[in-house]
Length: 279
Ligand code: 13P
Image 1: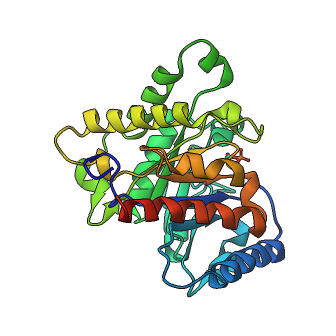
Image 2: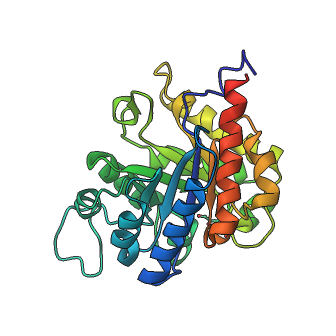
């Protein structure tokens, strides 16, 4: 691993939980508390991955409160791209930033499938997140029909290129990490229990890294962008996933809803970090 520059220890390993439309405020608070307590019970001194909890908007304040002083960060699941105005029901980026929310999922496939999100709206939102100091986790991934028709690589390429359109290398780069995170979530693997085999997930994540390399050629961006895999990640799959060269973490749905399911995934991320220190 020592001479493998693409598996870069400087790139953040991230384990993120997307709680989707689950949990009341008190349930979300209890889950965040159990995760924090579970982490506190672990032996001290072990490097942890970046841990990001993404509850619904109404639970953000409670989860932020519960994770105070812990290693956990908080993300929103969506946002509007505009700063304010007559857009009933929407949440604006400055509102999230003012709460100390640090991450925001953008273009999750459920937003694309059920709420009319497009590559163009994803691009506007990624730009807005960066403008407000939020780290966008831009989600991409093909539908089953697209995979079966051999269109996976084209679909993912289009989503990545359109999502990053008109965003400069300077907007993306920052010392010690990257301001943009990409999550590869094949839609057919989400919530189905059928995860994408690790070598194939790694191949597509590598393809994404290659696209970023072309897009920002010569700017040294691609090796610092964390690329996560999402789709039925669980305790029995995480170790293999975290051994892959281009998979820098996981975006987890179902297995993020209980501390006893999520904590082993954080451990999986920690093992990846440990493998760097032995590289
Ligand atoms: P599952 O882990 O439930 O498959 O969900 C993945 C996902 O959509 C995370 O954003």
